[in-house]
Image 1: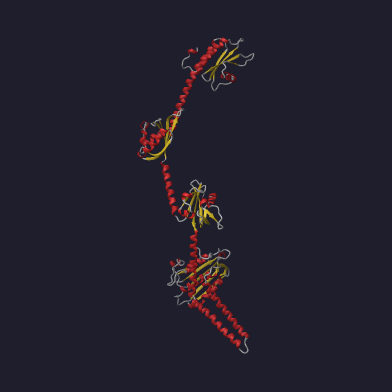
Image 2: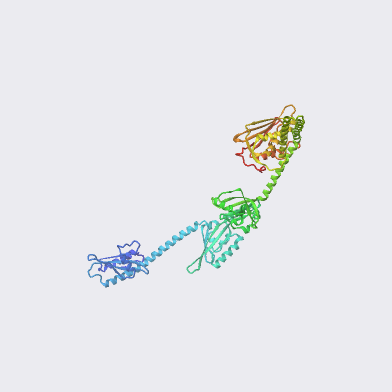
Length: 636
């Protein structure tokens, strides 16, 4: 029956034919063929039996009882595996005759051969189907790639391209086959591409090249081409696979970044401050020429060095201190201007610098490094000191000018106590020479001599203090006392100009923190300006008003007003500018110096005026408890 099976009979038909043939002998009660598929269970064939048959046993018997039939299992072996098992049940007491067993083994071997043939064909068909499916999936993936994919024969002639290639270059696979693909390269780049390609083919090694390729519309774009060989089990190249990656946008971005870096470097190289930048590890990436000069390091020598090796800071005791970059990177905060240290150069020279710094943060918020900006303060400090000295000299010149303007009235003021001293001294001498001497009258006359002598001494001390080139002495002052001292110095000058002074001290007997001489200079300037502003008044009283009162928070406000010609709006706006004056003989520094002095004391000065009705110059001074320590000269 097995011989009558058709060539296209499947494994199940072969198994049925085998069981039918075995039963036809009439010596077995049951026969069945169990194919060794994944769904075969232990109830069909015990696992122990399967193990025996796979180990090479020609047959196996299952354990039986007195009530159960005997079971024999015959293997159906293929070339390398157990294909199926022939299961026979025998109830005859004498068992199976050896002759029939041989027959059944022959039948099983014949069936195994046919099952092997059908199984191999089925496996081949399945393998072919899997290959077709894999090829379709590969082709789909190939065509879905967002890049140009291709493969060639071992000699470099093109076999196939994906859909992206054909669509981009406007060429069919047939047009690109062989060496037809070379037409897509930019003519100026053709030789470079072929040199790299031929070298890879001859050496059988992967290769890559960046080149321009021509789109179907004639536009050239930059691509990175990569090719790798595929080898058989013997190492022979059987195919080349390649891919073209569009890098035009990347190149444009890189060019822009490079241009930006060039502009950044050019900008930082042209500024007057020293600049150093680092990466996120604190290693130097850029140093501009000013920083090169201060540190003694060039860009070439300093690149990638720890910034602390190049930017060596020391304190006043000449001890090394931590570098600011570590502070910026560690805290991710700006290092504000005002940190002054000594910088030690590569040659050991020291410079006083002011340094500030900030982290470099990218668009994602990640810190990529730090930038330091510093400047040499040595020359700046020398310039500031020279400027301070010039301002001191100018202020002293202004005081001397004021003294010169007051010389006549001061001489007059000095003449009165001096003449009184002479008169009283002569009187006391006369009283002492009398017979008898009048001691009481002489003593009284001498007391007047002492009083007038002190008065003359005070006037002279005030003049000398104004003229003396001494450093300011800041301390608590009674503003009323300062005003009264100035009135004593200017009384004669104001009287000669016909000016009457009205003073109002509105609860202003408190103290301020300031320098007596500088505040006297401010008051003299404002009072003399007020007197000059009233010079043309003929038919009304010339009144100079001085008011001192306590404002909010203990601040003292002093105002000097006149009823002179007043100022127009433009003149009032420019009144405190240096070298601006409305006087024919003035140099325009008086009010500018006044503003500098008041602001250095932590106060404010201003003017209110009305053309034809007079002006009021006012300034404020903070109380000692809240005022800042005034500087020797006005701040810049």
